[in-house]
Image (spheres, rainbow, N blue to C red):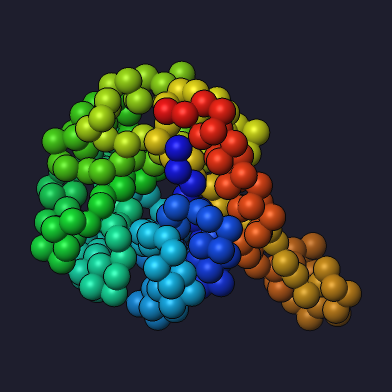
Length: 254
């Protein structure tokens, strides 16, 4: 079972690499569910990881739903091409119709863009699957479209709650598609995920830092919010997650 960390900075990518994660999903604005990282962030992250792990940028041109216009898809096609050219090992994409089915034409364009840029690029379908009408029908379509893996919480708010569906997904996908658990995961959830045969676990491993927490005077909002707060990758969480993955691999090899 592999460990993937969602990061929003080059420093976070470097932390994940230093602590032995296998991959990072690189994005911006994680508080909005994540959007495509800039080319500058990708370049800096490549320098920080120095070849120690794979970088898979999220390709999502805007926050909100996963129903994309032709212009949205055009934007993501360009983002895929540029980020893969910078050294990304793969990309993380997803698109749905208004009825909650896979938007096949949109995905065909995104997949073609990735394969044109790098025939060996890996393709991850993100948690749009958890908003789909039928996760099993979605899984079948992703197999036909040539995806490498899918990130899912088992059609529930958290992967722990979606354990039954995740187990069925693993059985249904077999060796053809990797199933990666993500969404509300903690290190304590890893043994159950490993036992069910999940190929990887995905977590943000983040903590909030703030100027106010260090005793500074705020000139910001008066409603109790903290305008100085932002998230960073928590080294200790990544270290604990990697230690658990290693322990499970030794105790229960798959």
